[in-house]
Image (cartoon, rainbow, N blue to C red; front, side):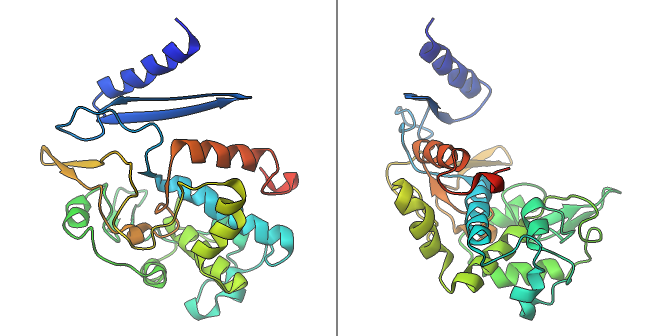
Length: 272
């Protein structure tokens, strides 16, 4: 069995655990391999397209962080700048720094909800996971503004004093979007195209900015609710602004990660 055969077998094994479809792109030196398994759509017969467009979830945060670190390298931002110095209207704790936002050590409440150490659930903006999934499915075309997501988070107590602990919070990356736009004076989408997508030729990557559609070709996405598979391919992704709203392809993601690690996007001292 060749290495390509083993890769194909591996993604077929994933499908056998219950996934509708899987795509994989591998780069090793000059060698690349792409494969897919399963179905592009329930009820159909086609496999997922090899370079189909998909919502990349929290991989979005890596693009956002790269943009922030480019601004740090240029001197427009400092890692230890208080975020409140750049975004005074939000009333942020003055001890929260850009570094803390990047590293999830700000202590800010996660606007999509939190589970406290004692097991108490504090709800937030509905998300397609957890106890408010049904509400998200019912209102998945609802529009959310980044500032409103931040204000919702700030209406809740902080999880801990800034810089003293770690807790994953989507709020951090919405704030980083606002920081990028404040420092550059441009929309995030424009900076992303100018700094990363254009130079790397990532033609399959975008921020939909509220559009519910995926470019063709694309597989379908589903959410299982009460034993029913609901097609959620189309939805407004603004509920997870800059923390999980981007669209890309497996090929583009491989190119981006390679560029990030080999110093084409950032000075080596900022790649850690």
